[in-house]
Image 1 (cartoon, rainbow, N blue to C red):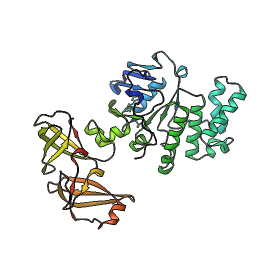
Image 2 (cartoon, rainbow, N blue to C red):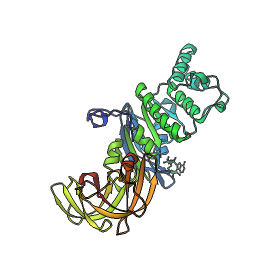
Image 3 (spheres, helix red, strand yellow):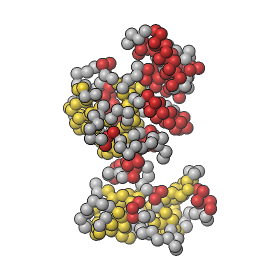
Image 4 (tube, rainbow, N blue to C red):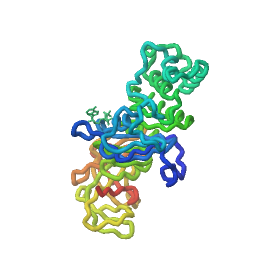
Length: 378
Ligand code: ATP
């Protein structure tokens, strides 16, 4: 998946002296006896595009609303720019929120919608007009300035909402499913635009999304949430390549999970007995593992390769193709092993066209390098 960001060797979250712009310290939110957010601690740095990702109901919006000041934490504290937010009202915080529904004023035209917050703040008319023009140009809707919201498409309304949220130049912008109303193509295009705008303005963005591809494309880091808790916080690439748990491996992208237990470990080469695979599997893992420890091995479908007589990969498994999903650029194959376990692998269709096309019920041999497989201990 492409991520338009250029990764710098030293990211702010790795610099010990860097003071985060947001510190969430052991924050919980209880509704009755139900914990919507349960003991979450996160540090977010200035200029980050930070995503809160997770399935519906995992507490993302509740956490965002506590940052905005619309909900008060039951326990824990939130600091913005070093200041404790406990007694600070939403309008006194250096944050702005772009709502899921966009919440535009239907009776006002686009320019007045964008100017609304500036007017309330008492910004003089001339300055306000300059700022509105800047915002219209930033989100490329100059020609729509005099239209009412009902005369706009979903994508255009989304741009107006973004322009309105950015107009006050907040230090931090909170976005709740900002691209939720857009169709797939427009959403992909807008993801890149959002990143460009965020980088140009240098504002910290915190985005709630349940769409893993969206989070992977846009974010500097992702907090993956589950049942009110944070499961893993990492840059997209790390989350994908080194998921810390079965849940993370399963949530981000597709993955083959194979159960087993450790037979032996020599230096960082581990041998795992897996009944599901029907063979012993070889994997590189640097943490010490005791023989007998139950583990789950995680292999991405794109790391599984077709084998032939000359290939020398370990982890060789024979099976029969049971399903083929053609996705245009790639195809996904489901291969059933003699144990009944199914393994997915993907093949680019340029490669497939050059070779004999694979078909249903064909017997194939698969394999993957020992260093292409993750070991999940939880
Ligand atoms: P979605 O992606 O569906 O918006 P979410 O991860 O943003 O989900 P939240 O809206 O934060 O989830 O809700 C987390 C949990 O807290 C849900 O089970 C929800 O029903 C519950 N919840 C949220 N607000 C309230 C409330 N005011 N009173 C009672 N329960 C609530």
